[in-house]
Length: 336
Image (cartoon, rainbow, N blue to C red; front, top):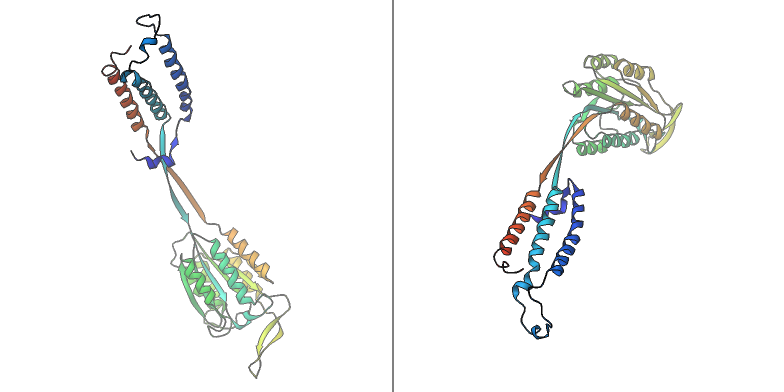
């Protein structure tokens, strides 16, 4: 019998342990019975018998009681049904495939968000990825052209590393919203997920690219991809870093240009939603709201299997009883 399992044992019917309270009564009954026995021969004095040796049978007679008590205790524990359990879980998830499309044009270095728009967008994107445990997520970057920085994947560690590597200047400058949207659609078009989502973040107006944003919109609708659009930038003017002729960087206030009508059209016609982020807190709240809107269905089925361990105890109780009976009618037979 493996005694290590008793560290994790449970009892199906622990109420049976109340029967152990009968053990003191059994001991009391045994002692009383011995005291009530009639002497085989009466003598006026036992003084002359004090020096006689006591038989080993007499000395070991309590062993019979001990065996009976051990048998009773083992039987009680067996009745309490000792058992161990093994729990397993079956997890079924209806994951969502998500493409993060992030504008990395030069204007994303504006410092109306801290430390700038691009770094703020990267930080909230990483937090968003951490919350989407069971979803496949990819990263598309765009400025004057678009590029898949990370394909759709469940390896969120790799994805977050790729987000951290993003910086302005990786692609030709400009704002090709149509290209960014079209590349994101291309990442998701062959997906078998029940829900496909694009989160497109930009701070400008489409001014370049081979694919018009409205054409990319129609492609998104054809593949039933929901698009959430985020416009980044304060209302009015924002500080932009400008490179001076001598190579130095100076901050200059420039008008914030954002094509909100286009962003709203893309999101509304695909079943998504448009958001405007004028500061870091707005951006955090936007991703948190999208996280709530796009909930992943996860079903967890728990299975609990029990292994019974009463049989060895029942056998032990039987062995104690048999040993008592054998000793009582052999070695201890001549005792009264």
